[in-house]
Amino acid sequence: MLIRHDGKLTGWAAAIVAWSVAGLFMPAMLCGQPVSSPELARLFDEAWQDELRRDPLLATRVGEKRWNGELPQVSLAAQEERLEAKRRFLQRAEAIDPNTLSETDRVHWKIFVRLLRDDLTEGAFRGYLLAITNRSGFYIDFPDLPQWVPLATVQDYRDYLSRLRQFGRYAEENIELLREGIRQKMVLPAVVLEGVEDVIRSPISENPRDTPWFAPFRAFPASVPSGIRDDLAHEAEEAIRQVVVPAYRKILDFMKSEYLPAARASVGASDLPNGRDYYRHRVQMFSTLDITPEEIHEIGLQEVRRIRAEMEAVPSRIGFQGSYQQFVEHLRTDPKYYAATKEQLLKEVSYVLKRVDGELPRWFGRLPRMPYGIREVPEHIAPRTTTAYYMQPAGDGTRAGFYYVNTYNLKSRPLYEIEALSLHEAVPGHHLQIALAQELEDMPAFRRFAEPTAFVEGWALYAERLGQEMGFYQDPISDFGRLSYEMWRACRLVVDTGIHYFGWSRRQAIDFMLENTALSRHNIEAEVDRYISWPGQAVAYKIGELTIRRLRKEAEEALKERFDIRRFHDVVLGSGAVPLDVLEENVRRYIQETSSR
Image (cartoon, rainbow, N blue to C red; front, side):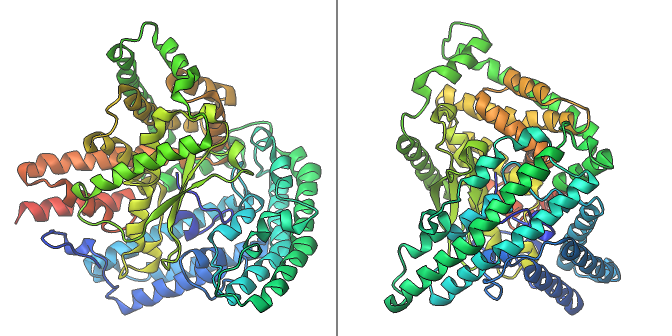
């Protein structure tokens, strides 16, 4: 799973997560190319600059430093201004006849228009009033600020201090959104907010030096003169004491006195205002396809049946005596399948990834220059977040990508899932795909940093299965872990639509996943709460993976002995992250051009 710790994202930031290889044939339109239409290039640049100005955290992430000392304006007025700006950009785009554009520019135009229409539809439903989930939001993400902002120069430190001083205003504006959500009945379910008070309290301390925000002032880089370090540290103490900590106390008081009492008892998005229409929109936005909740639910049931048959064959392969359910319980409870320490877990993950690194050139013609690292999930969110996630590199190349591993509650982190999890979150999953996209230097900026969920998560799920061909999952138990992860994503199609469209309870969703996956109860409950608080997002994984697999099969059958897996993967990744209909066009063009050579 790809996560960005910079608050509730809107606009392209929510959709968002020139190269050739010697001897490698690539269709011309798939390479990073400058926009040839001056009018279109100007429109793309103006819209992108507007997005960065309105979201300084996004700007920092992509390497634009002009707003490094700012936090976003997220008030109700700012939301309306942002949407109005997007309406104007959409009007300008729709005034351009795509038939007059080059083939490459038409693809850019199509994606640009889709992103704007999706964002405006989300705005029409006032989705921005759901400004938090159970695992993300301004108060969850702000303690992580020191981990990803630049802190190499005196100016970097002053920019960081400026953001600390602005947090009071930023928190007030987020509270304004949540308060309006209460008025409009756009609020989270109560069940996913259990424990939120502890999350808010976690970074608070009477001593500013004991808070996560003071971390950069404990050890300065050599580039910061020693003569001003004490002054900077003193300024940080004052900003944390006078602004940040009081803001967190205000957030805590608001949640206790206003938001939690107003949280709804129901769990499905269909119970929100215009909820069924809102959920249908979310399904299409996250899947990037014209597909209905009913269709997704049925696809999910079919996939659950298929994968269940494969999973049930594993116990006999290893000579297990007992029923399938006894086998699953054995996996959930036998200590030999779990790390005794967090250090052991992290070492196991590191070893798997080092093995994967050595296999990549056999499967990809192009590999990213940017490396990745491994970190532990921060303690303040670990109990309520997923098993792992990935944070993308800085857009300017100054920070690597990071694979975050959850070391909380080791009895819920089975070792037999490590191969599938690591292939998904790092390589050849999220890191390989996202780092490559960011290195498409001639691509319009909004394309380089786009992260349509169906493509990004669909590719990462495809990468899990690719591990079979790469020589992983040799142990039947590890292969069961892979199947369990695939089943997890298939269950999402059923559970997400079940909760948000067909009226399922939280208990029904948990029981369905307990019955059909080998995930621990802790993980299942955390996942179900994630689906409840983030309608539609979870369906994108399996839909994207099924699309990539279908297109690969189509290419293999059409090209036969001319099919080259490295070329196919480079075609899939060569345009950055794209909506699935654009991916289909790219692959079919590749098939046609390869066939005609």
